[in-house]
Image (cartoon, rainbow, N blue to C red; front, side):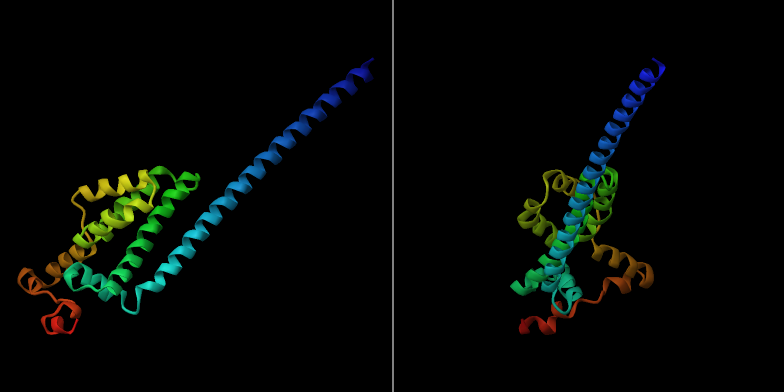
Length: 192
């Protein structure tokens, strides 16, 4: 009789162990699938940014400066270079949003990256126009709304930081005489 009860209990324990093992295997499969999905999403983002990076041209810094200092001088090629720069930059911030949706980052982490960099890229007339006219529609609404919120605050773009550093180093008078990008200088106005 005792051996019969022992056999029954061993059978129950073995079945419970088997069930727990199956649950763990199912959980591991789910984890692996989620990791594979996240990896594919991240790899797709990297490939997209690499494709767009080719459009930035040989001197992306000159085009970025032109967009801030004299956007009226920009050609379609300059626009494409700026589009590539801004898209890849914002796409990296969006990647953090996507990874948060997958549970890799937290909500506060992707929002902090937007808080830190949306102004840097978009808080100038060209950047804002680009965001509103073209880019906003490519991103998830929650992400786009958070970018909009940041742009409504008193955020600074890269040129305003540069200007502040110049004032600090050179003083107000010297800094206000600022160096203008060659593409915006008076001598080159007739050549474009």
